[in-house]
Amino acid sequence: MKSKKSKKSILVIGLGKFGRYLALKMQELGNQVMVVDKEEAESQKLATKIDDIFIGDCTNEEVLKSLGITDFDICFVTIGENFEASITITMLLKKLGARYTVVKTGSDLQSDLLKKIGADEIIYPEKELAEKLSLKYHTGYSMKSYLELNQDYSIIEMDVPKHWIGNSLTELNLRRKLGLNIIAIKNSGSVNVVPEPEEQFRENDVIVVVGRQSTIIEYIQE
Image 1 (cartoon, rainbow, N blue to C red):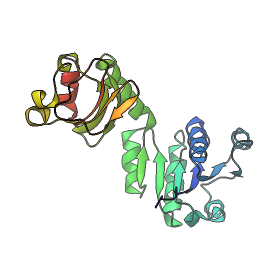
Image 2: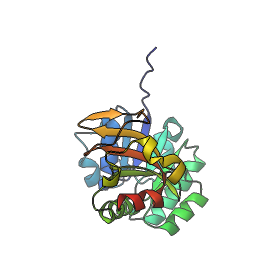
Image 3: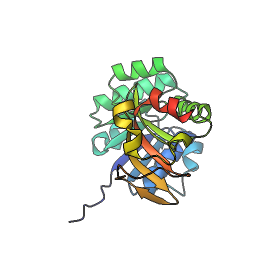
């Protein structure tokens, strides 16, 4: 039986560049999106692209009440340049019974404060992008992308290290020696998500590896 694609009800408060891109992508993915901004000029930038646009100041509790907050699966607060407004709106969303709140922040201190007042998730786009770019260029372009699992462990997509080419998983014994697991190998558009232990790494392979980030970075650079 095929599972039906889940359509979510999304509220995006704040229509700076990040909020606009987020709203458009969420709608493109098939979700029901409402966007809110207190400035009519910002709202007009999406007038022909988003069906449900509301102009109002969400630091006003009555404005938020009128939106029916409990009807939304996720409420995004993307007012990164006005932290006082972000705090007020987050507190009001939680008071009004928001199911899940995701708040954009601009510093670690702001993140800590938002967590204390009940934000379910914090996003810090500038910091996350800077970390990804620094790793990419530090490794000489070998790293394609990464997902941080915690402070120490990550899933990293990267070019196969040159000194691995011609060797198999069995020969390298990466799990025992380094604590690394290869979960996929990509080459020429094909993806092997169950690599055989005897399969040899080839030039132009791109691998997806999970393990301690410091160990992976060390082997990218060898």
